[in-house]
Amino acid sequence: MEDNRLKGKVALVTGSRRGIGRAIALALAAAGANIVLCDNVKDDGKLDEVAAEIKKIGRTAVIITADVSKKTDVEEMVTRSAARFGKIDILVNCAGIWIPGQTLLECPEDNWDKVIDINLKGTYLCCQAVGRVMVKQRSGNIINISSKVGLEPGTGAGAYSISKAGIIMLTRQLALELAPHGIRVNALAPGIVKTDFNKELWQAPDAVRQLSRGVPLGRLAEPEDIARGALFLASDESNYITGATIAIDGGWQVAAPSGGK
Image 1 (cartoon, rainbow, N blue to C red):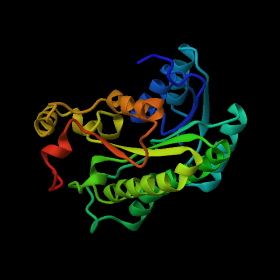
Image 2 (spheres, rainbow, N blue to C red):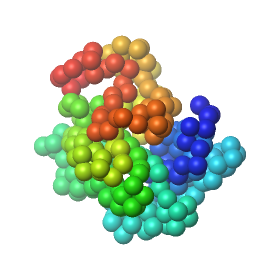
Image 3 (cartoon, rainbow, N blue to C red):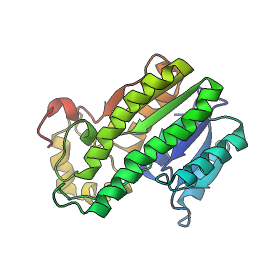
Image 4 (spheres, one colour):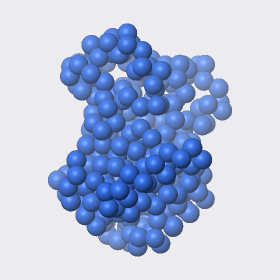
C-alpha cells in the first residue's frame, strides 16, 4: 500500500491504538502522510508500537492521549497537533466502543451515555475542533467511521447502532456546511471486521463460517480492507465525493437489505 499520494499531508487518527484505527494510520503513513496518533489508552504500549512502525517507513508520528468524549481533551489534542505541524489536512474518527448483547430496553442509562458520548459526541467534538482549523486553511478532509448497523438495525447492537446512524447524519450535515470552505466529509460503514473489538466472535470457527455465508464475497473483513477505503477518501482520487457513506461489507448490505441479520 506504499505510495506518495498523501506526501506532505498531516493526518489525525483517533482510536489508532489497534484495529481499524491502527490499520488506517499505517495506510495513510505508507501513502506519505505524517500522523497524529490519538487514543484514550497509552499504558499498554500499543500506540508506541504503531508510532515505531510509522517511523520505520520514514514518516513522523506523534502520540497524544485524549478522551474524545471530553471537549477539553479534544481541544488540547487539536491545538497540540496544529502547533506541531502547522496544519491538519485529514481527520479520521475511529475512536469508538461497543457494549454487545443489549437491547434498547435492557440498556442501562450509563451504558447508553457511554456509547453515545464516545461514538457520536466524540466524533462531533473532533469534527468541530478540527473543522475550525480546516476552515482557516480553506481545505481539509474528514472521514468518519460508521457501521453497517448505522445503515440498518442489527440484533444486539442497541445503542451502538443509534450512535453509528447518528454519525451518518453528522457526516452529511457537516459535508453541506463545510463544502464552501473546501472541506470534504465522508463516512465508511464497515461490516464485521476482524479486530480485538469483537475477537470473541470471529475467533469461533463455527460463527465465522455462519457469518461468512451471509457475505457475498465469502469472508469477514480485515482492518486493511477498511484502511484502503479510508485511503481512497483521504486522497485526491475522491476529490468530488462529499457527504457519502461507503459500505465496506463484502456486499452484505445488498444481500440482506433489511431485517437486521
